[in-house]
Image 1 (cartoon, helix red, strand yellow):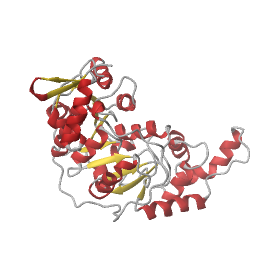
Image 2: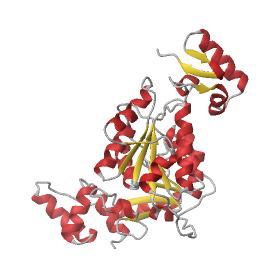
Image 3: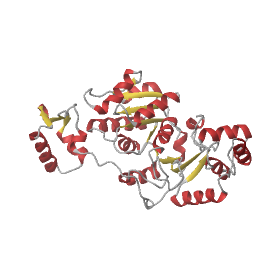
Image 4: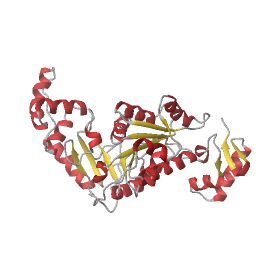
Amino acid sequence: MDDIHDTLRLIRSRRVGAVTFHRLVEEHGSARAALRALPDLARASGVEAYETCPPGVVEAELRQGAAAGAVAIGWGDPRYPPALAALPDAPPVLWAMGRVDLLARPAIALVGARNASSLGVRMARTLAFGLADAGHVVVSGLARGIDTAAHASALEGGTVAVMAGGIDVIYPAENTGLATSIAIKGCLLTEQPPGTEPQARHFPLRNRIVSGLSRGVVVVEAAARSGSLITAKMALEQGREVYAVPGHPFDARAAGCNQLIRDGATLVTRVADVLDGVGTVRPTPVRPVVAARRSAPPPAPALPPAAPAPTLLDLLGPAPVAEDQLIRDLGRPPADVAAEILMLELDGRVERQAGGMLVRVPD
């Protein structure tokens, strides 16, 4: 197994990505040998005065990660998740915080819309709890909406949150409390160096880890063009199963899922539909291996602006939702929600149906 310093120096060197890293290691036998060969290889390719990542940069990264309470797991380390290790673009280094033992257990990814509907959130909670109860680790991306519901419902059974930025940069900031709980009961995971603020280009990289860790990917609400569909596409390329929850054809948040089902994804209406494909896991009880714990989250660096919290209209769609369920999902005083519903009814944007059910009127 390569020394973590050599592995980090190679992957942090200029023009070396995950695929190039693995090719260099295969050709030269080790990360250290690849580092020695890299300047000559660069010169032969017409790149003059090429320098590999300085040792001091790697030492600073390791200190920052340790200060955040995380550990670096290099490709080839026994703790490295086996499902991810076989991929041609497997991250050479993963930063982890929490129960590293969860990375060795069978996992299912559960992803979906950030602006999830009330019904979508309830479905995500049901699926995540059922999958965790059957012994699967639930993997998601710590985003608002479906991801948040999945992590929270699977927390006691086992969940892994794959982050787009550094291990010490929680995004969105509103999930700081959830991330702190996952760092204790579950596992936070990222390939980015500590302190990295998430950028748009980091999210597809994160998505390949989400699917790569998992036996299959379950999509709960996704627009026709969304990150969740990117994750599903990556899952197929990686040889994983894809499952999708159908939705109302008039709800844009269901378009992606309905498209996946049309193209051959397994239709899911209950936990058993997923378990029929992946089975029930009965893991041998193990003493949790805790990579790190902390009493409080580190100070949050400046983050990209997050989307606003979901509104009452965001949670409604063409499928009817009970008013009391809507009140619970919003977490606001019932009188305030009732007043807003009445205003939206009078404005023609919400329609009340029999039995106290509410639907959103199409714009």
